[in-house]
Image (cartoon, one colour):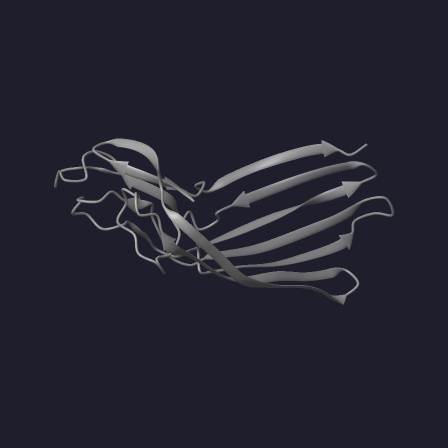
Length: 184
């Protein structure tokens, strides 16, 4: 298995050994009312190294979690539809997303800094609009609470430099928009 390594301000790939990813996902959908759909999923993922390449340049051990793998993740959505006219259907959709904590990329041997830890985060989205024929107009607000969940990141400079900056990739900030599309 190839692993991404950050060392002395450079990104490169190194041999890491073998890995295993076991998990389970449960998804469901229900229509408690003709116009209401409730759907969701929850997942457990155990992605770890199982053996170490003797020539590896990274500090890893058998059983270490693979970079950026969330142990738990979940999604829940509610979709309420309602007739506006005999030809137009309105809808409102609410969605919640969750990702548990993750660890960053492996660190090169001799680097005193530990692997980065990215905290768990949640995101909520809301949308509403109307459908008629092949047309759809959708007003949406993604990341409604404007949380800054971290998806990934890295040390931005020399890992041995205490003044080194960190670089993060965040989930998209609150985004409000309008889309109109036609399905043919």
